[in-house]
Length: 168
Image 1 (cartoon, one colour):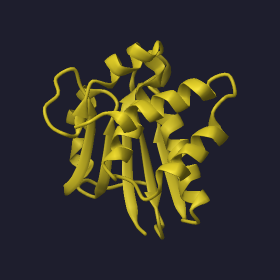
Image 2 (image 1 turned 90 degrees about the horizontal axis):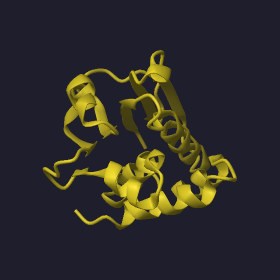
Image 3 (image 1 turned 30 degrees about the vertical axis):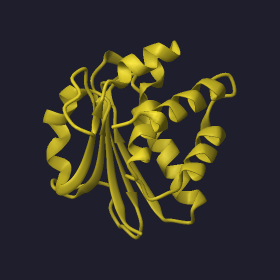
Image 4 (image 1 turned 90 degrees about the vertical axis):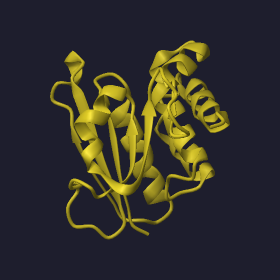
């Protein structure tokens, strides 16, 4: 198994939480995993990107045109980090205008759950439904349960399941 994933968003959107979920899922399934995050301006709403490599890699960073999957929690980040996705890769984009079967308005879906901070898990569930990742849905659920703050667990699980349920 070899998969390279980027998660891109702005500070406060849950990029680092998704990175932890993917890393935990890889370990639960017995895969090697490397992660790297750049989040210096995260506290001020700046760009945040994480690299996740599952499999026998030696370096955590993903080069241009090499990522298999990209989760863009902010549509504006597609222009910044979209070049990391390989030509046959998948990009899942949170955008108000649904353009294709890999884009959705996760912000509005999160607002419907009563917590805009769950858009990251809605995006993760949506990409999982499209078979974008190396692991099973149940492994992802287990990781979310293990990593979530107990006070947020129920809401996090609802958000992930909401993403899985979105058609597209």
